[in-house]
Image (cartoon, rainbow, N blue to C red):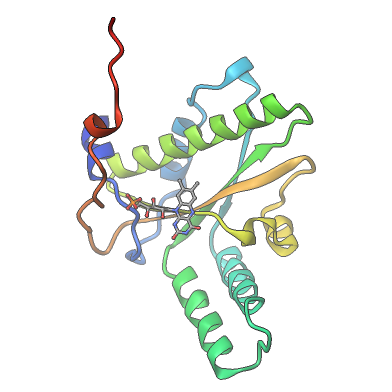
Length: 189
Ligand SMILES: Cc1cc2nc3c(=O)[nH]c(=O)nc-3n(C[C@H](O)[C@H](O)[C@H](O)COP(=O)(O)O)c2cc1C
């Protein structure tokens, strides 16, 4: 599939088949990720792939994180919420955690974050072009010490996104956007 088709049909996938994603395919997608533009070639991105039992540990971390929303985490409501998150987290066969270097220099830090998110976009479009689905998530779990330990986030790096990856079990139509024409001014004079 060409890049324009992949970009236009990509949408966040909520439901995956259980078929495993071959390691060689994940490596191919990560090779596409690191082709992203990057000022001064700092190569600020790092990735962790969570598969197998690590995925279950991630599900427990996300569920535990959800429980923190409740003043009493032992209520049936809280436990049901955590259980839902655990089940949702176990749906995709694989997760890729994207991390970015945290330079002490503010401009470099911003550019490194941007470059890492461009790498994430490359990853997601390449996945789409191979018939895979993705869902990028962020949120407070990115700073959860248990997640940092599970993913092996190095010192002076931070998690910037958590990508579900797998073969979609259903294909939603792309979500609507304002047209670019509405949001663009051509400056020609
Ligand atoms: C930086 C970033 C963080 C995101 N974090 C979340 C998230 O925490 N939870 C979530 O449900 N979606 C998250 N998303 C995905 C968006 O919600 C999703 O892309 C948007 O709803 C548009 O849907 P589409 O991807 O199907 O076009 C994030 C997207 C980006 C770019």
